[in-house]
Image 1 (cartoon, rainbow, N blue to C red):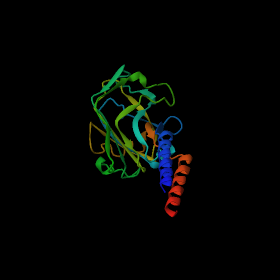
Image 2: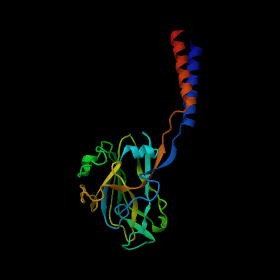
Image 3: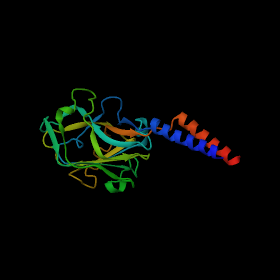
Length: 250
């Protein structure tokens, strides 16, 4: 009996070690809302020169098509400049700076097309502020002249957000950007996504009812993928169960 017990323990330890080596998380990216080229609209709040607040819901169909799975941990976001180029207000600036740029994520309580104008009524229980504080970057880091343009630098989160399935709610709000700024590429979204906007920093309700609801920024999310158990590890777990069963029945 002792020998069999040791066999089970040894096999379990081997599987745990193997799982640790082969089941580690992998860094990945997911481009959400990309129509396969330039989007049909430009969006002026994400990198706009004035303070703004936006709330966007991306449907689960878009997320799964981009490769985002339940359990993946979202760690950053980036935008790409619309092919109309930089915002004509101020033009390009060597350094753009923002006193506070906040990003929040949650599972959306309401599907695209059904967002409540009160932002709080759309936030699931996992609502989290994933980034806050100053943000600065070189305006030339956002490529122009393409259709579509390449994505700009990743805005890293202070805290990762674990995707638990369903529709994803993105909120961002920022104080004014010091000169420069840009329109970001956006796509006609309904019925797969919906956005609502408000002028001003950290506002709580939609300020432009019906304006821009049918499109959403095209975004690139960086995330840590949590891989499925490998077939070899699953086979080993089955063997462990078989050995354990023999031990109980002998």
